[in-house]
Length: 167
Image 1 (tube, one colour):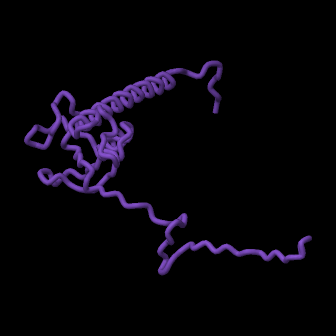
Image 2: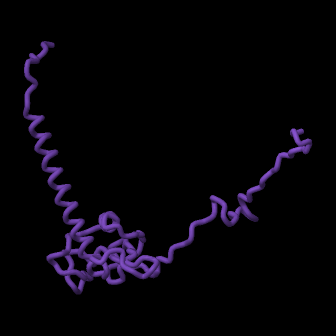
Image 3: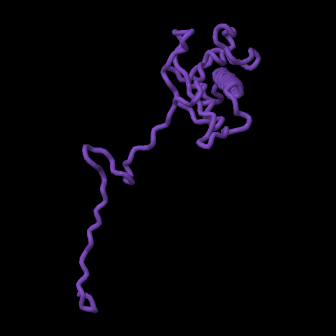
């Protein structure tokens, strides 16, 4: 009993965690995230930015801006580096059934405005993705040359001050 003479009871607060059949209740931490409608996102196939293809083969950007044989993972990394939402799909270009994969890129935010003025059209996005891939490949090639030069230099250097052991 408290000093005023009234009894204080423990109150139990019940928080709904899951509804019927495992469906999460509204407002609970396990409620499913809203589904994104990928149908309104723009599709970009690797053939669209491939410099080994002609315009009739599916290339959509000029040859000087295109990159040789891009893959879907490179394209997704490049689009993410441009701060664009990306979704990878396992689909095929209808005119080339042997190449696999595409990315979907969201160009407009929920208010209908482009994420960036420089990336307002699909053609601009494709050119920027190709340029990011070119830069990444150049950096990777430079790093590979440095690593091979360092490996060659360490292989030719002899250990100083250590005589050979007799057997």
